[in-house]
Amino acid sequence: MLKKTSNEKKLVVLIGDGIRHQHFLFQLNSKHNISAVFIEKSKYPQPIAKTENEKNAWTWFFERRKVFEHETISPTLNIKTLNNPDIFYVKKNGLNSLKTLTKLKEISPDFIACFGTGILHEKILSNFPGCIFNLHVGIPAYYRGSSCNFWPIYNSDLKNLGATVHRIEKGIDTGKIAGAKLITLEPTDNEQTLAWKTIHVGTQVMLDTIDKWKLEMLHLKEQKQIGTLYKMKEFNPAAIVKVKKDSFFVQGHFPGCLLYTSDAADE
Image (cartoon, rainbow, N blue to C red; front, side, top):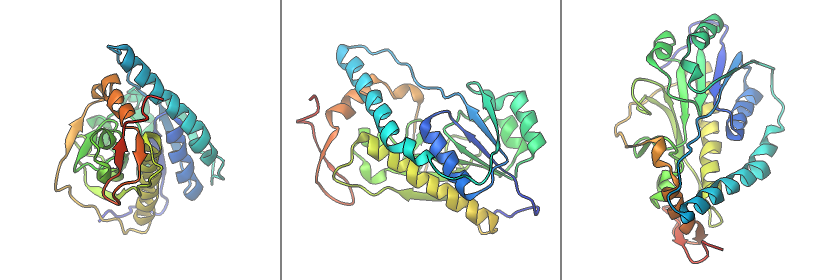
């Protein structure tokens, strides 16, 4: 059980620089005062397409994401927040810099909520032991590492699409779990809506985690099973080709999985 240690609690948020990360921040700030926000320049993969088909698939995926984020996620940012926290912008991997560490020590946060950042190094973890929690858009018993709301789609394993909030410890996505939730599948889902749902439910899990922490009712669970580790370089045009081929759903079995059809994939 994670307990509070003082009356005045400071919440700090560490995020990437995408719209989805802003959604996470705004949702948290609509419910809780935030002392400071560190926005890290995101490290997006830049793989080389080996074929024209791969190039087209990569462009297709990210154009669809851009449109989806503009139409669906951007409107969620129009929400009233409780305060205007200090904001610090850092470069790629900048959260592990001495400058960031010094600033964090000055703020002295009691709870740090992370989403979409690079891996935090030991010098950060050791200075804030037990109080850094990560939104992982995956179920770590099956999927750890990078883009874990993509790989269940790639593997046609939609029953394991969800999100987890875990304490950050040594190892990638192996820390004790504060909460987790699977998404609800619908016949109209596609690769963009499924990924978004993991972010949406994961943000709710983080809010629930913070609420329980404030009430001194946060219980953490050990991970009993450690899933496959996916690296950033594996999220590449060849993987997108498969998802593009299988990207149109037909009504299928619920709630375990949806059936795919590739008939209309290349319209």
